Length: 190
Picture 1: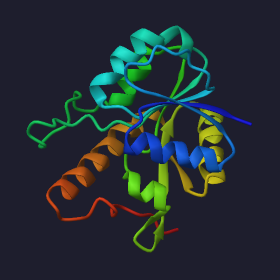
Picture 2 (picture 1 turned 30 degrees about the vertical axis):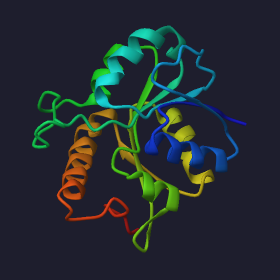
Picture 3 (picture 1 turned 45 degrees about the horizontal axis):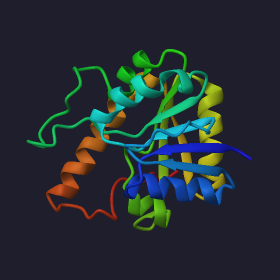
Picture 4 (picture 1 turned 135 degrees about the vertical axis):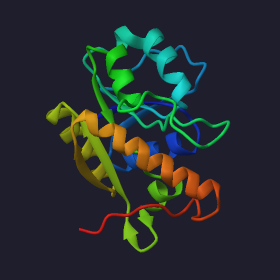
C-alpha cells in the first residue's frame, strides 16, 4: 500500500485525497498550520502558490527522497491577468530548486476539484497531466491516479510545467469569467 501526504484540506486537497483513497493508499491530510511529521512517500502540495516556499523551508529535510507534487497555478489573484513566475519558468521549477533532493512533479493544476471528484469533464473522462524529470516518480503517481479511477497522461519533462501552468491559468480565468463552469474544463480525447 502507498502512503500519501497531502498538504491542504480545501476542495482540491479533498478531491485528490479521494482519488488516492480509492486507489487503496493510506492518506494523511495536513492543514496549513500543521506541524505533524510527513508520513507519505508521495507528498501533494494542494496549497496556494505562496505557500510552496514556506513548506519547502519547514519540511525540506522530511521531503528529501520523496515524490513531491506541485498542483499550484501561480497567477496574480489580484488582477487575474498574468502568472507571477518569470517568463519561461514555473512554480514547479522554483519548487524543484528549493527541494533538490526531492522528485518534484507537476500535476492536477489543469483540473478542477469537481472534475477530479466526479471523474468526468462533461462526457469525457478526467485526465491528469503529469510533468517531471524522474520517470519512476511519474509512473508511481500515474499508477495511483489510474488506480483511483482517473486517467493519467505523461506530459513530458518538468520544463513542461510552464505550459501546464499557462493552461491552468487559462482554465481558471475562463471559469472566473463564467465562460465555463467549475465542473467543466479541458478534456483529452484519445
